[in-house]
Image 1 (spheres, rainbow, N blue to C red):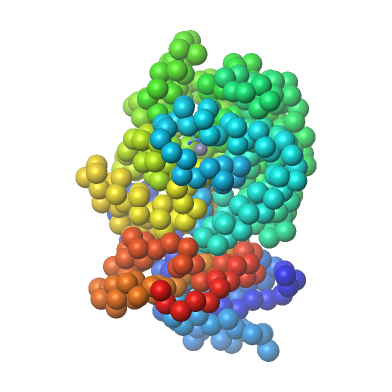
Image 2 (cartoon, rainbow, N blue to C red; image 1 turned 180 degrees about the horizontal axis):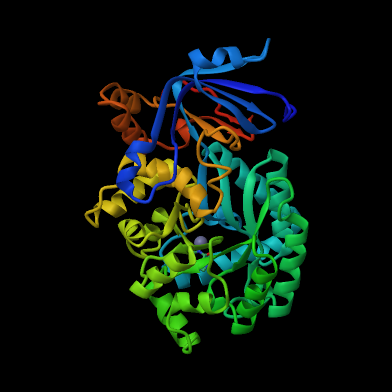
Length: 443
Ligand code: GUN
Ligand code: ZN
């Protein structure tokens, strides 16, 4: 990898969303499309961005310009919920959430007590993210601290901005996957001290979900969050109806599922709740009031038969939301494929997800959900230079469809509905090209 001090210059067609918005219909006005643009990066950040014709004189002498005249450059995709140890169980047959956890997930996660195994899968996982144009992710590890070390070490090698944490579980799981309230606290604290803010890494306190933590453990998690207010909280919420009924029996004193987390101080502007398919009205209000965020994981919600996430309500209730793949309940690492399912889930509810809204959720909106919109999500000068070069024509069928596109929005929508990892031409992280698609003839 070349030095990060090196300047990088990229010329091509750029598309991003300039500002965060309060309503979906405001996104259109924030779309920025630069037909022949130039980006100059320095030390991993965007130093200059604009029209090629205005930018040429900013180019230092002898700098090589990477030119992508036939592609489309968008900000790096942001995955707001994914499990790295579940990479190998994608597409496990036949179960809904609680049975799926016992049948497939827990046995798989037991393997991550072995640091060599954790390293091997962490390498594979990060490669898969980059191959799919995902440059930032909020990631579940396992209960083993060595799984967190393995992931952050690989992220560091690529200078990726990754948020991750050790899972906390002290009941309702195999004994070898359980810690205790005290161990959860002390191991998480050590990991925060070791990794949070090291390079681009950030830490998330990660109770798996309310059913696998005792009240004592959630209290310890809340204590830790109070000690380190700028670390994240990452967990699951209201994914499946049996899960919700179980939480109500385990925590009879609380008003509902989200109230469990809220009671222990686990809501807030850096708290991300995966799924939220079946929220009550007061839970939406609580997410809004506490500025907490949701990870919408359509491929997972469909695969596990969990339900249809009401995306429109996030706008109505003013709750931050990003897209999540939720590997391995989700069925693809790819955000284009995730958008395909998001669109269909909204169609089934009479809500039209536009191409620009989908782009927003996958980039700047996701960054906002992670409280990182000041650093990520678009091409504003000073932001971190994470972006993807998309090939719109990797297959004969896409080529035909793109040749009939009725303008930019239709072209983007077709890309989203038909796209997958074949559309990822290059991935750049912190100004450096970290993935190059192997060349193939059009398939
Ligand atoms: N709820 C608790 N743990 C999990 C998990 O690993 N995946 C999903 N989708 N939901 C969960
Ligand atoms: Zn999950």
